[in-house]
Length: 116
Image (cartoon, rainbow, N blue to C red; front, side, top):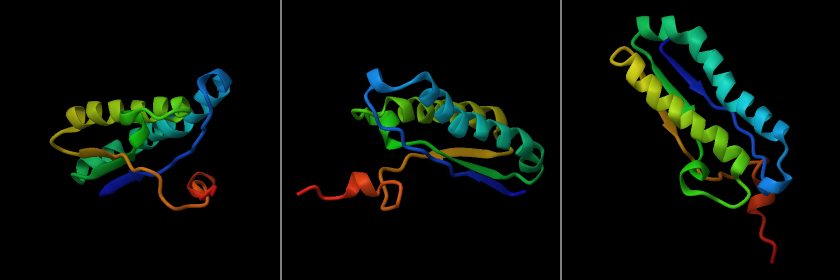
């Protein structure tokens, strides 16, 4: 295995007062724990092939947007995991994260529609 790209995402947008514990746990499990399991499984193959890892964060975790506390929390954890593994697995494996903004997709369609 020369590389791993963990490209999952969800978007739970609601004010903190309406967010349930389950929202945080489900989002964390999808984004962080899923990545952790994939990375653990792939580690020996990545190291023996001097592979690369790309994880997905979100621009929301670095900038702070209203109603993004759920997704920002888990994507911030992805950034922490990225920094830790970049140090832990160097120089054998490169570990990076990208933090995209909204892209045109079915998931983002309601957010991108013009309400005028």
